Length: 575
Image 1 (cartoon, rainbow, N blue to C red):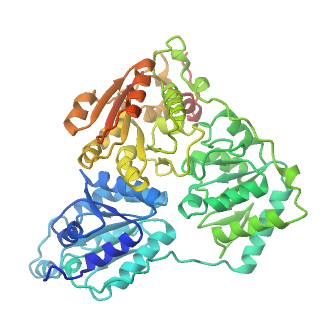
Image 2: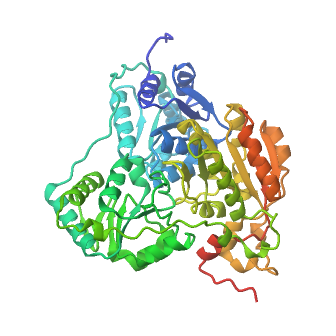
Image 3: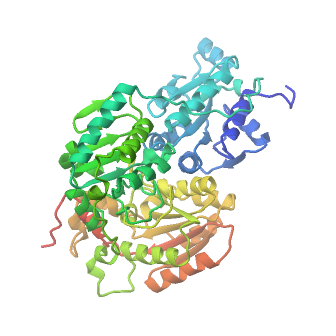
């Protein structure tokens, strides 16, 4: 085959490049070699070879959240199965990515059928990869020929950018290298679905009835607004309604966190007191793009009938459901109602806007009140946020989190920029944050600051090596207490009492993080006091480097952040 032959792989890569995908994460393999070799020669997309499948796929997830679309190339079977957890998280939390793979080819299949050969990386069911990925993607395809490949690729990419979720595309191993026509220069666009006019009118009328009857309505914004590019529309609704608003943990930074109308993020009992009180007192919630998880069971059990829930899959006002109504159409129609309905007493309905308090001191573990130099979860964020604000860094960084005590504490931050809080708040994956740092920084072109538990970091520490390999200067803070604290909180919170004992499975091995940083080619710092923490923060900000930085933050084993204590259903009893 001539080198200048335009192939099926080239077609897919061109379509991705047209949508501003300039980096593609990959794990190599023999079946997928025709694709990876095409990628190596392709102008305009850099190959990011990662340490393992979760490293690649967590990075692709975060890249999709910050860039609008991502792609990851995986080997058949062993790679796709390993990456499944990360792709499932992207599916749940609406991050668009194209998962690319290859299967045994036509010749392999004929030999397998003739001689009953089990091919490597195969379960024996050559459709298994696609069948499994059908559960965590909005569309999937296995190309057995180059005939019709262009049309099928376009259809898959359109599905990804329309639904803002992953898609899966594999090909017989030889197909990625087969000739293909070139795509048009016009980039692919999401499909636009329009609402049924009568259904839209009925939905808005019912919502308006609840809104105008309420004494203290508010807006509860979620991640779908951000993913589907509706943040400006949300801001217009906030301005026109006069309502204060909150967000879910997953939806945090759906807008810039500024102005009196943002009362703070609502993370159930982990929220600051002002936010929980406001939610308890409100009698109508305009939930826009809001993914309601079991972190919000109190809210669902107590406020279900007060909700106007508007998402990409459901439009509900109170107990009434409306089909054939889109989220965008509903938001636009509701905005028009706020702006033009002369019977709406705007000024009277605008609720009193609470002052956002300093959240850290009151939530820090009182066991350490007489030890002001000890770093606790809340003291870390108190000083880190102060440093960020003093140095005007919010415009330059994003924060990434897996599920950890740090994530829940961090939801109390106020003042972050749009789409700068990246977390596994719904899928709740321990370890997501370190792999996500690479994709978030490459996707956003802002420095990633990751705050990881040591258990989560241990799961995906090889990501530090990938950051070093590609000169990505992300900062990884490891909250080092040598236990799975978040697991212990929900198993038995009394373990945090002075005489309490952690379950054996929650103890972690002791690592030499500074030696690990050196081995992986990263900068390494340790902070075990508030003074050392502030010195490290100053060093990170003042030092120019193209290396990642690993910072071990030494905290007490039994530091129990107030946010976590409030979340546990078990009452703490230290008697």
